[in-house]
Image (tube, rainbow, N blue to C red; front, top):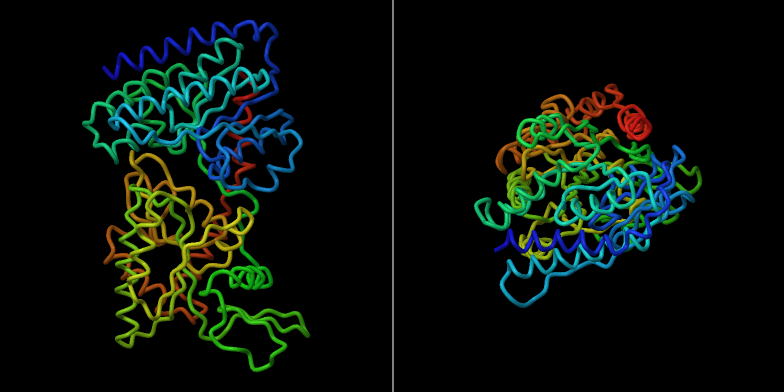
Length: 463
């Protein structure tokens, strides 16, 4: 039945599109692109980077997606980029769950088709983020056929594997989504993907040829100077208690955060002796990130401090939005930690890289539903020369080099041991964290713009 419903949806899309065929009398503008995100534009950094890179190369860009988090200021101020918002479709709280999903897909298809045909100018390319691919791949393909555009799919992961985390991979809806994604994915003119492992899987199992475009940090992900760190800590301290100074300075003219102190006479900022270590974990609060692993590791770290181990206190900042945030926030509030403070802010787009550039260590819990994508949060951390502890999965070695730019762990016990080892020499200038930082600085990995110019731009000029 589900297959029949999907066939009817696709047929309706085609018939509805034919009624609007008269709008496609003129050819598309070749140096124009519509970047499609069926999600929150502000939480889609890779697609924002695509839009900025295209605009810098003279393309007129329409960025289509949901309203939500604030995009980067650079994108908002670029005259060649026009952001167009679609209404977000929420789950209908009636009827069986499968039927709810089908109705949601139909409504999404109508909204996307309307936006692409009636509100978006004719473009030479549609660059689509996948997942979600249902119904966006089919809708974008129909629009490309009608308007003579080329369809480019940027494969971040597989949509059906993400659905499988919720429904189980044997669920008929997940199997249908896999069939659809495999079939419709072949309709594209060009394909990008985020890892070599995904490129090989697309070629072997899907008969899709793709170009690997690794996520790279934007230029604004870098080390934060002490002066910028101090301003950020003072700003966050107005809202979040862990950033506030635990003691007042001897000189009342001095300005102090939990980590830094400003001498107003000289303008010099210094780090406080005995300051806490700053741990950052960016999460989407979803089922593919077992956040309890970090909480168990922190509880064990707390017990070591209580037992007299020479370890610093911790401020653990967990950024992000997602469906499980409230659940874990309740658990955190009941932990009763005395030497570890945890806060879960949602930061402005401009403050997030400053926080990474101010931190001592990053933790990544992203496992990947397919095992074939890489966490962009680690890419951003490495751009700030921030060492990372990351949970192991299939292709993580393409990004995190164990004992070189960070550490890889399997469970909460191993993560706790790594935290103990890294922070046991916290006050020493030659500690392991600083060795990792040095390795990251010396690696001189290319930034997004440089990588994009080499791998993506030629595809938009020779097709």
